[in-house]
Length: 393
Image 1 (cartoon, helix red, strand yellow):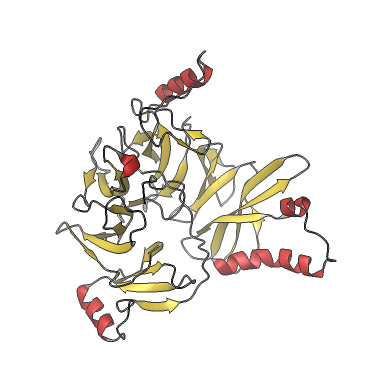
Image 2 (cartoon, one colour):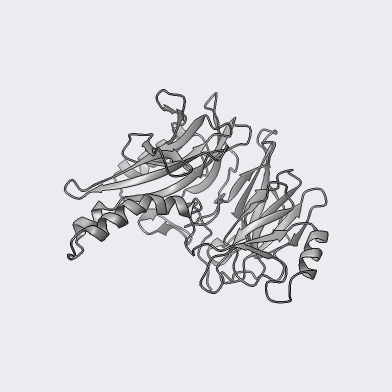
């Protein structure tokens, strides 16, 4: 992905090099186009990305979805809105989902216009396709008394914004981030049927499900058979002073199924769930010390049959930022900062494989993983908007 970004930036770099030297101005800043939200097609041949352009004279910024071949050729604009974001391929690679004006749209790559999939007033963020292509999960800020009832959500929002009393009310911390006020809302994980467009709330109640996040891996994932969703949430009474997020499981086959906590034994931070390719285990990032945000991020896996978890990142002594299962499910590839770099490393997932890896690697703080490649320290993984709440360090 970083090579693709470099290919996109080369024309800008070349043009700057041949131009006559002069002071860098605000106009130059606004001429720079920003690339983000990379998404690889299922067959690995195409890449979706967003391109943001600014118009200083009109004080306007436009973000649209583009597509190009994996080698950087044949780049072309797919959407023509003013603020199109979060593009992703459907599992069969025939459709692109993206967010426009706070709602989901679907664009057929074979031709035709984008159709609006959701009509929610509470907004859409971090859309995720189910492996069978029948569902899309997304996060939305709703009023707990309404859940996925959009008419109810809109009525309360209008009362806040159009009432005679213009004020914000809060009876707990975490009531605002920058200029965004919660005003009694909670983040819920919603599910939309791609065919019927029906939307349902998978995580009703007063808790943020998933929790607030500024960046990092997505906090929910589908099982390979699309029958289950794993999602992270902190249910402590005082979430503002706690890092006790847990991984919860929601049965999608059962209507109104209650989420089930699978990491309750750890009172530190557990999030970023990802199912193994065979669906038997769930990998996630974990911190052991409660209420300590600077604790080491380790990589753990949960065995769904035995109901037990274990650490697989061994003695890797740096934070694990992002990770993905290998295609055969025998190892997990992860990234984490090491001495100013961001190498890509591999952790075996079976005890036997970990023992063999340990015996062939010289003892060090990295005795149980294999360094597979070096990358730059800037991550290009899709960034999730939701992150855990801020707690005292």
